[in-house]
Length: 108
Length: 142
Image (cartoon, rainbow over all chains, first blue to last red; front, side):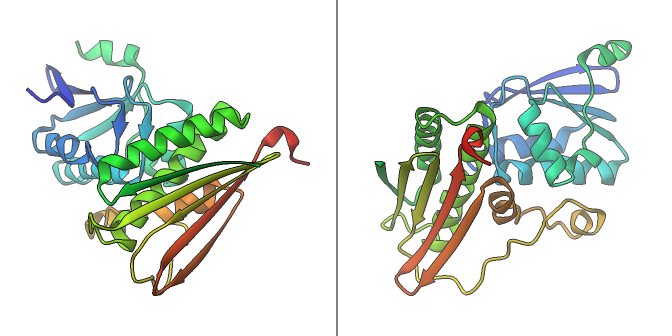
């Protein structure tokens, strides 16, 4: 089991809880590796994440690419206002919109 | 004026040391939490550029970072020991269908720096590149 990501699966959904506080050059490879095992609805949970830089954004974009190739839906959850700002700046929000935890309840 | 200086080897893990220092310096200088987050990201990108593009990952080469607090201004200089760079692309870089399809998933760093700091300058020569970032406390800005 990765100490960077904890997987939680139910039905067609996988929630990938990012356990590291920094999504950066150090953690990027371990995070990106999880894009090999996405589900039709994949949610990245950023509740533990306090920092994301461009190396981290590059890793997250690998999920976007995989989702587009597979026709899967990709969402972000528990994104801080600062990181929402950064995602909007690079227009990543278009490809990874945010979802509320309560909206996931319908799939459980 | 107050000054804090750091030197790190060109190893990515040490970028976190500079980033943590940036957070402490920004807080000590009275910047708001949102400005401190902007500062951390801009400094992180500058240091990673110095490691990857300036020193080209040569661990024997250092990255020097100087923080100077001068009233409402915080100036950060990030210097590498590389051979200089010909040009820096600070054009707006966003995610779009074409770049995703081409697998071009990098290159956001300088755009983020240019958008997050109040001003910046680049001085590059065969002796290395110095990227200077300036941020001003918002409560003092007119």
